[in-house]
Length: 357
Image (cartoon, rainbow, N blue to C red):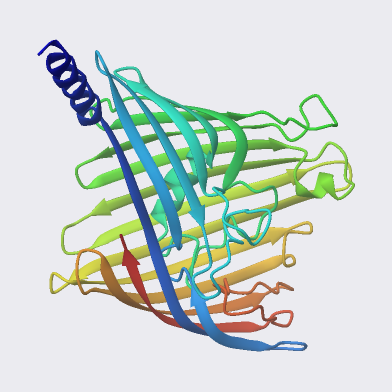
């Protein structure tokens, strides 16, 4: 009798602990067909299966444990992969195998907000990229981050703090240790954001500073990358308008580049199951910016049709025109690289299927 009571007590305690914890497996598989073509001297074209045209393909695990007293602990492990080939060479992974390169964090959460440790998207990028109708993926993706140096999207060895929501006001700050054999501040990162999101209005400002960025690693000592961004949107119900401005500067012993990028877009629901969207972007590069100095104008049009809450068909068309010596290209989304000539134009079309689980 005593043994039975002890066993029942252990089972009850185990059940209570399990009720206070949760682990979820999740992911996205996004595959399509893309065609991209450049014009001008030395230009090429490419076509084939693409990945991540509407949402980046990923596989992840996340969990939360209730510690009591309003305190919670959590973890988040997320790996990117290329659904057209099955390899894991995505989101900054070091090889083709599956790595938790999209996110690998542990958190402590409570009334004070959240403290997060590990590899993650920078807070400023995470918030600001949401003001692009096509994010930074697919042929219509915003190239403000992709065409600059310094890896402003994710950082290793990072400590982050996020405030609670104060009537729509939130803020976050990141600090990433350099952990470099060169010591000191080399490869160190600091950044953050402040945002207001309440009702139809959303506004975010963000900034980043990275020491020893990519050009420094190529031999330019004491190089730094700084980015400053402002994003805003307003939902009128029948349509939503968004805008984004991002400036990236790299300074160093032998480099002083600058690129200012702008995006203005609109999206609208269609029949309760679809969304149509359009966006204009301008990229203005100076002093040796990535893919040349000069300007590039990009117009993107897209439609997403939801077959269910988890499955959607999508189509995107994007046109880019280079001027003043620029030779920017559209994001190739895994369909294969291509080139465009100086002052050349780009055409890209992509149709695909996205499934989330």
